[in-house]
Structures are given as structure tokens and as C-alpha cells.
Length: 248
Image (cartoon, rainbow, N blue to C red; front, side, top):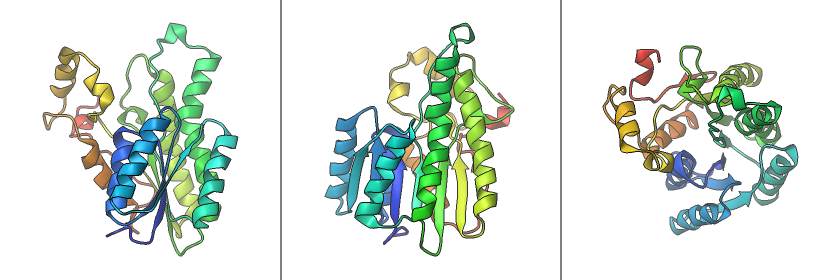
């Protein structure tokens, strides 16, 4: 029970990586505050699953692209738990928009969804981290590094590069009491992968040295590590099955 008596906020928790993190945190004894925006029914389903494990949990539906949604989330955390130990900034989404179709509105939406939400959630979480230590773990991506990218998701890549930079700067500002790190996953087997053609999935797998997609449950283990360790801060861990070795 590595997270016993700890309270954790997990954004983007209704499916995929966020859901896996929430369940593993609950199994390790944490009080879990789930937040999502796109699917309230999925969020409520995850809440029920966690409560069936015997853990205390709360679900909040909020649009984290805007500060009033973030205030709604952390007001609820303060009201129920009064303090916070761990923030997992996992909310985000890839929008496939070709360069010729990009405009001010689409680019701002990429930044709000994938970067600004991480920045402002951190801002509102920090005052609640009144215990001896606190932990912030941000979800980045292999697409946020300067040696990789992908056509059609320029805004997403730029936002995740911002998450990487923000992680390092916030870690410096909050040390030594609050530890701030990021996870930059490679190809993870989520529902999105299931919606793609087999030929595309096979092409991606052929470029992953371990020869398969990564399971959300495997990624969740990295978040537990970073939410309990006192030696990592300003670190970006890349669980990608070796994909980044190729420099693509």
C-alpha cells in the first residue's frame, strides 16, 4: 500500500492511461479524485470500480481548458479532503489537423487542452499540498522532444514540448519539498489504437524495439514510482519500448 493515506487528483481519468493510474493508485491505498470532461458516464464507471475496491473516491466533471473548471475541481478537493498529496496532470488530447487547416482557434485549443490545463492545475494544487511533501506528475509524450514529431499534430507536439519545459522549471521552483516530474509515453494500447486499421498498427509495431504496444497498466506503474519517490524531480521518463532509440 505505497499510497496509503495519500490523496491524489488524476485528470483525464475516465479512460486509457488515466483510468489505469486511478485504479492502481486506489489499489495502493490512495484516496482518488477523478476528473474528466468528455465522458461523464465513463468517469462515473471508473468511480464505481474504485469504490468496489474499497477505496474512497470522488468524481468531478470539469473542463480544464478554462480556469473556472479548474477552480471547480480543486474547490471540491478542498471541501472533501482539505489537503492534497499528489497531482497527476494527465488530461490531454491529440487533434489531427494538417498545417493548411490550422488557425488561431485550433492552435489555442491544442495549447489549452495539453499545456495550459497542466500549468493551471498545478497552480491550484500547490496551495493544497500542505503536508511534508507533495508530488506532481505530468503526462507528456515522445512527440514533445526535439528529436521527434509527427505530421498533422504540430499543435499537440508544441504543447507537449511546453509540458517538458514547464516540468523542469516547476521542479526547480518547488524543490526540495514538492517533486515534479513527467512521463512521456510512446505507443500505448488505448481505445484509439483499437479504432485504427491493422496495417497502420502493424507499421507502428515494426518500429518499436520490444515488438508490441505498451499496456496502460504498465504505464501506470511509472506514475506510482514518481508519486512516491523522493529522488526524482525535473525528470522526464520515457516508457516507449525503446522507440526513442530510433530518433524518429
